Length: 275
Image (cartoon, rainbow, N blue to C red; front, top):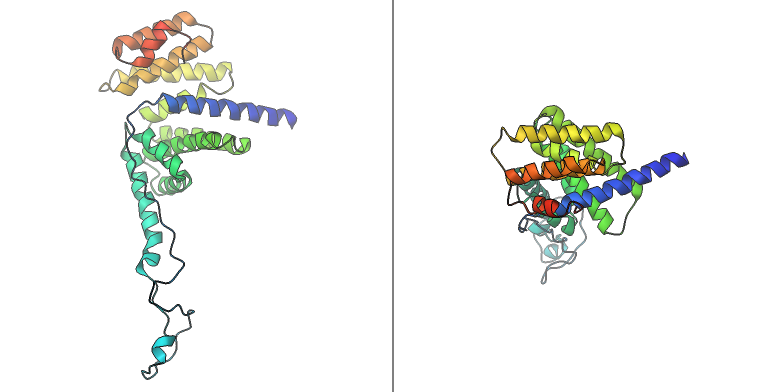
């Protein structure tokens, strides 16, 4: 039991560190996310109206001067629409995440700051259940869970068990996305990138190398995108981790010929130990 707990703590710490490095590497222009903060419902009755406890419906009676004073005041419309507004806000945020590309990490950062990640994760889980054939949903859900790991860490460490569970759930969601669409670039990359930071093992390390190498081959058949430089960076890191610096340098150099303006690859060539 003690060895299991120690192993879990090692995994949790490794995944947390990996998650933070991956997320920090996403250098995209920050854009304000459409985060809507729901105002709490007013607890006081509007000025000029008399607060009267709610009563059960009564039979109709004749109008009288005293009757109007006993009639409950109607609830303001904002109290009735606030829950719906909150739900609609989360729907719109999730829609933005699923359609976002360059601004995705900026949106996640805003959601973490506003404390809405839990709501977004819940909404994504529901959508995954309702749309089991859409790979973008489990992919985004996995990324949301990794961002939740970072938020917990930034808040002061949090529960290591919770961090470990979130990290494993994220990996399971990437697997679910790849089961639907094995060629999904985003799911392939984020899964391999996060695996780099798990405790080393021969089988896992070989899997990371194969996954990233296959992803690089796949990219050559696709329209070039700036993010396609990232698999070269991580694959070179993996080779360096395995004690193969020559392969690491060759990988980074190959990436730089494809993406000469990528600052991370430039730094890797000039300073191989840079992360």
